[in-house]
Length: 120
Image (cartoon, rainbow, N blue to C red; front, side, top):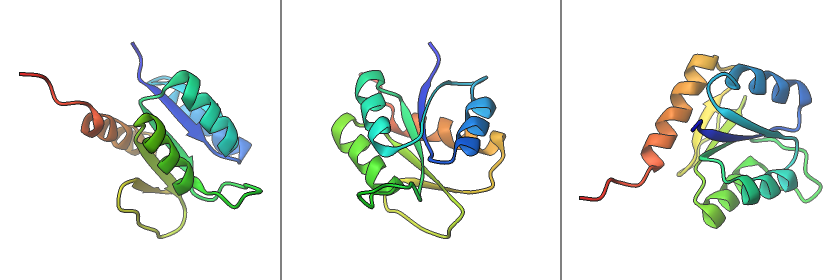
């Protein structure tokens, strides 16, 4: 079974590029806003979410807000993509531009860290 990832970015070109770059390695669910991200996560339960930090949102929510919701509601770990120099205590930050290989490494690492420990 392929690992399912959710990508949320309001830039259609970035969304398309990420879908194409990662689609060979993962089952990619790509949406263009926060509300679609929440809906998709609730029905599809991805193993990890990737969100742009600066999402155009009428309620002034951003990628950190979205990832907090995904983690609290469904335990979905998150990665923030941004061109800005920011930090977060729980979510992994990946600076743009990023290579496909590096992004795959980060995704795989987040999935491994969030996987439940094997039962003895």
